[in-house]
Length: 222
Image (cartoon, rainbow, N blue to C red; front, side, top):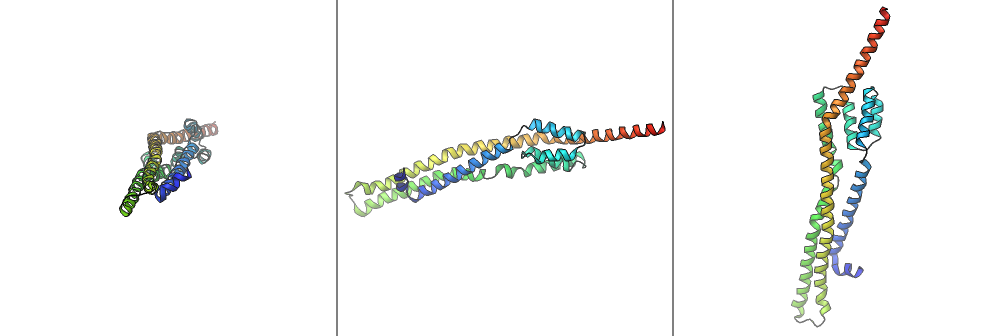
């Protein structure tokens, strides 16, 4: 293995460095998506129950304890609950858009690695072939075939290295992009339901307060 790395030359070292960077990005994204994965239906019901009781501090605390983009969206909605519904929707849409960079972080870099790796492999092919023909041009007939084989080895090894790095990088990139798109679609679909939940909670709290007030007034008259 070490012999192949040595024969691959400087271009192969670049490809290996890119493979390590790509692997680090994949692992980091997998861990991130795992950390934000939560039972969102249960989270939604917990927050809804707190909002309907008027316990907004409790609802905000539940949001703070979750790293899910949905919880971040709900938190923004709760903080702007006093605004009209149409304004709330616009604010929630802006908040959803602000979650995009966090979800897509480093994914574009992985896509760049997936595209550049085979090009570097092609560059290694060109430089290796140039070395091989350079030997033939300098000496004409080569008595030691190993001298010629070094250039050919570099050409083949770097080509293989570029493809080996590019294939899993492309697969991982497409999977991560699809994951982000699904999360964003779910967030967009929940904007309306979030606004309805927040405002229904406000109406229940206000109607409850009115009922208590009426009872007090009726008791005073009695």
